[in-house]
Each structure stands twice: as C-alpha cells, then as structure tokens.
Amino acid sequence: MMKKPAFPQPVVLETERLYLSELTPAIYQHLFTACSDAEIEAYLGLKNEAELAEEKDKYSKGLTTYFHSFKNFRILHKENNTVLGRCGFHTWIVSHRRAEVGYALLDDSYKQKGYMTEALGPVIAYGFEEMGLRRIEALAAEYNTPSIKLLKRFGMQLEGVIREHYVVDGVNEDSVLYSIIRPDYDQHKPLWNLQFQIHRPEQL
Image: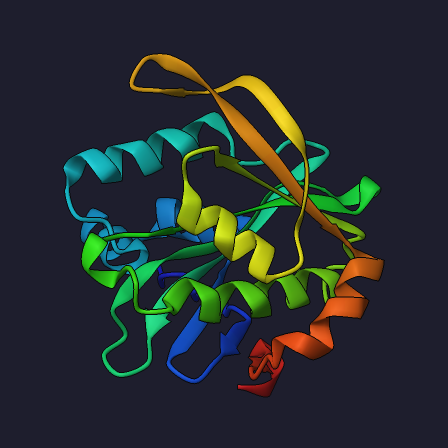
C-alpha cells in the first residue's frame, strides 16, 4: 500500500488565546489531493456539504496564478483547537509587494470576544516583516462598522470608495478601501502592544 504523503508543516503564530496556523497553496494542494472530505471539513472548520463544495470549487478553479498567491491563517482556540475562522492575505502580488488582507469568523457566537483584534495585528506584522510586503489593503462594506473600526485600530487609512464593487445577494454594493504601508506600520506598531510568537516548521 502506498504511504500517505506527509502533511506540510505550517508556520504557527501564537497569541495569548489563539494559534494562527498557516494555510498555503501547498497545504491546500495536500488537503484536496490526499485527505478525505471529513478531514478537509475538520481542518478548515467547515459546517456542511455546501461549504465543502464551495472550497472544492475554489480549489478546482485555481487559487493562484503566475503572479497571484495567498497566505492565510486558520484561527484556532488554544484551549480546544476549535477552528474559529480565518485571517490572512489573498490577491498577494509578490512582484509588487502588496496584498489584500481578509478575515472572517465562522460563527456569530465567536464575535465580540476580541478574537479578530488578537489575530489581525500579528498577521499584519507577519506580512510586513516576514513576507516583505510594502502595502496591505483591506476592503469593507460602508455599513460594516465593526470591520472599519478594526482596520482603523491597526493604522489603516481610508483611500476612497470603489463603486459597485461586490455582489451581495445579487446587488452590486460599494466598498471602502483602506490601506497601510510599511512606513505607517513602523510608526504605529509600538502602540499596538503586539504579543505573539512565531513557530516555524524547522523549530518544531
């Protein structure tokens, strides 16, 4: 019997309450070529077949191109390893040293507990200091006050409105564009009081 290939070991960011476990193209490749549906659902924190089908569709259509990549992080609670959500970078254009940051919690019961505030700062720091980014962008609906407040908390500045940018329930809605560049980060980071550790695969 052919031996199952070893799972790629992720970088893990550790905060007070969370593990932020790296999701890379190599890890997605392994998940969807060497793991069962049940293993994929457990690893990604998927709740049902529809969510699984959506992830499979994304994978089959190609998550990267010759100049776009991504680096995401699963948000895990340290007490029980529950997958709370994801936070990380997509539309990462390596040659231009920029990426868009996105984040989501998987259940409303996880909200208003400070998890995303605890996760986003280390992820932004990782983007600038480890991935060599010069610019990080974020997009939000104009009415998404909690998300906008979170972006401002980490030094992001409003650049403008992108009209009819996202389709929500069949309707094209505007997005507000925020960004932070490396000089902003260097200025603001001392005020954030970030407390996290980076665990690299070679150290495990």
